[in-house]
Amino acid sequence: MKEFVISEAKAETAVLVGLITPYQNEAKTKEYLDELEFLADTAGAVTVKRFTQRVGGPNMTSYVGKGKLEEIKEYIKQKDDEDDPIGMVIFDDELSAQQLRNIEKELQVKILDRTSLILDIFAMRAQTANAKTQVELAQYRYMLPRLQRLWTHLERQGGGSGSGGGKGSVGLRGPGETQLEMDRRIILQRMSLLKKRLAEIDKQKSTQRKNRGRLIRVALVGYTNVGKSTIMNLLAKSEVFAENKLFATLDTTVRKVVIRNLPFLLADTVGFIRKLPTDLVDSFKSTLDEVREADMLVHVVDISHPDFEEQIQVVNQTLKELGASDKPTMIVFNKIDNYHWVDKDPDDLTPPTKENITLDELKRTWIARANEDCIFISAKQKENVDELKDILYNKVRELHVQKYPYNDFLYPEL
Image 1 (tube, rainbow, N blue to C red):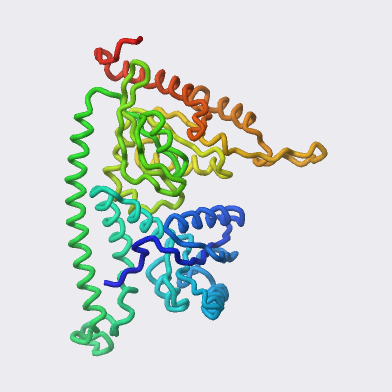
Image 2 (image 1 turned 120 degrees about the horizontal axis):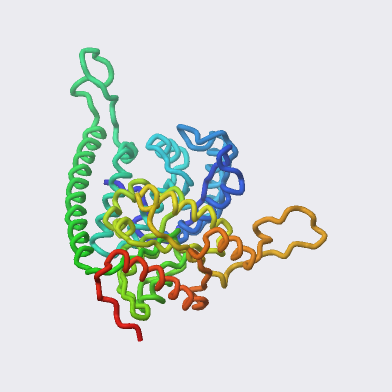
């Protein structure tokens, strides 16, 4: 079967395409394309050009208008003539089968959307059998409604049958449609097998969680690339893979942490992202169960990111969809060593923007809003880590006493 997603990281050149709409202004589109470029970089592609178009909404047949599509086509042709070919065009939203087919026919290069790019990164990052199974299922779910475009190189006669005698009568179906039905059946059978495997894995994971004894479970959650794995390594003295790339962690890692006389379990989970494909959330059920079954959540935020407040909203919305928004939660603002602001000119009488807010002002604002449920740290520079441990100790001990009032498992305090 013809593949249409990147199967391995290659230094290919990419063009990004996004839309400016009434619901997504120019600044927001730039932020989304910045993130898309980071995704492309994580997958192994180099972005050389961006195209945006101001429209009321995505074109149903080609995502962008005909003029913009022609402009992209001319740019690709120009790069070909310069012997510097474009490897792919990546669109910031999920494309339908019709849009994919029409765009690919017009541009004659590999076409990806945000979802297929994320799926490719997940396939590249998956290490365990559990993660590989989850990614494969998500890829098939994405692939199934888009199968038709894989067989456009074969002659297919129209569908339909009956006594009309027209195009598509019984016995006149082309080989492409036959192959299409065959592939659909193979994929459905494979998906059924993968679902059974995941059900078995889910059962094993559930048994493992039950066998962890009477310990409070804490889960690190947050947007991708905010430093959850670095914090995990600091608290658990472990060697969880951490890298300045999106989705460096796919498999949930659980470690036993002891702070003073208090043992508890800490889980490092997969990071969330804007426009996270629903198929991924469904496929990663067993991984995200660590979040659902946690007694407490530690929401890690990259305070140096210019749009960290929206990232907080994305994570909160995802937690709500997972049914985990009502759990006790504390916010850890990470990367304070990387926070930058611009001093406002004293003569400038315009209202200050978020770029003019100092770290101290931001701290006062959030501490007042979240009371004792937030802390500002630098996991990389190990700044305020002891204070984080103290807050975690108090919160976990309180939960431990509530959940296991007759448990004498706490170590004697030294």
